[in-house]
Image (cartoon, rainbow, N blue to C red):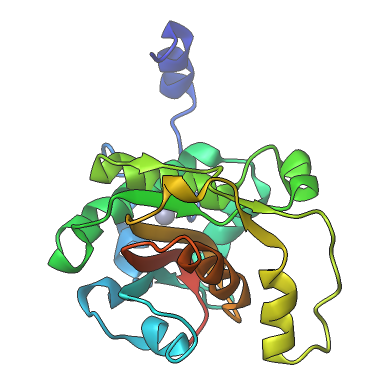
Length: 230
Ligand SMILES: [Zn+2]
């Protein structure tokens, strides 16, 4: 429940748009109208095959996949991602997750999902930041879909090698060996939605997908908050 003083604070200092930080957000929203109109949505989720899924073709068995936004340098998303990454605003990411979850449900490609599994953050990073944004995004999506988010299904092991200079396969194998399924029965025979924050090389998602496949899941879909140009 919102504490009583929150209403007074909001009255004196109305919250500003989560993207531009200048204008007032629309009612029941986190962005202003200008920012909503400018939001670089990919629309990938409406197509079973799209640039996101092509990125993983031949690498993993993927039912479908999508990124919510394009991450473009200097654009609105970069500002938004900066807010997400550095301003310690888990509520903002939950809201974005719920928003995207509702969009996903409008497409029949996404309506058989049983469980959301976020990519785990390295414990050192999590301790520094206080939360895992992939997990928070996943919780928002799961809430919108009325299913559970199993944020402890996957675990990173503690050893780390630098991935710089490695070939793709080498990188996947190194990262792959560092993800462990904590309890395979949690995901066995389930339609799984794997969630991460940003799609870059895809090596992390690919490694998590391989760990999930070892538990004989029913199907795999993946989403991220954002992606670069694919
Ligand atoms: Zn705005």
